[in-house]
Length: 324
Image 1: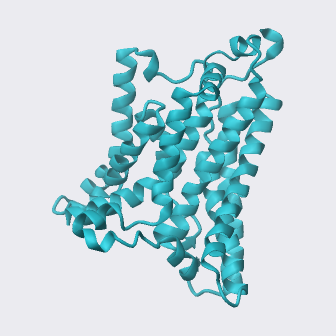
Image 2: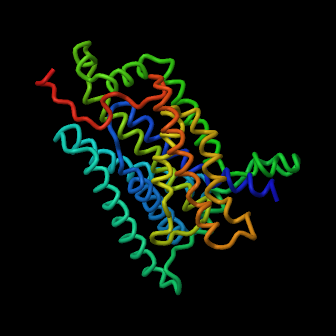
């Protein structure tokens, strides 16, 4: 039972890891993108659209194309959302909080519209779109997993997107901490005026960080739909987008910390299914634990007042060069 719990915790945590890694990269540039839930939703439906048409209109599916097409569609859809946010907040200097929330509403609406359209195309008796062939390709696990017993079931029985999420998080942590690009990005997030005076193109870094972060976050939506559940249903993504934002705070803006944090959040998200004898009310309380843990971490890091555990100083603030 514990092995099954850990396996499901990893699977539940991967969408959060994609979303939090993308948001951390975005926030390191000073942009607070509360549109991550909508971006993940668009990333999911974009991949579903690509997979749907390839699966239904291709006489013989190529495994490589069956994975590549929805993957690229998800990246393109998420990129467009990132460009919208960047144009409004960086170029037009709109309020970042309002823009992010509007983007979430917009993304969910876009997803539900196209999801409903696909449901009508297949004339399904239930309001959902099943992608069994595409899902099977995404879920293909490592060939040696079955030979490792419980360890293989827990850690090596997942599709490639699980390991890709961990790799992206670790590479992002290295770039932010150890490279000149990461140094410039952190400088833009801490003090854009100082970075600008030093010759760093603030707008370019904000655009790139937001768009790349959006593309990574969108992959979380793709993973949840085509790998974890294999079925698209409107409003079926739940509050995972908001949990991804909460994970950013829990990981204190460090992608490598988000790897373990996603496992913890994934476990807390499903722990109520494994606890019996406490009643329905207690199970609902257990669903609150990821947010409670986030609040506790936020309080602790605020008390400690360590600079490396705090968000970028210009987070959520538009940069006006003429005021430099």
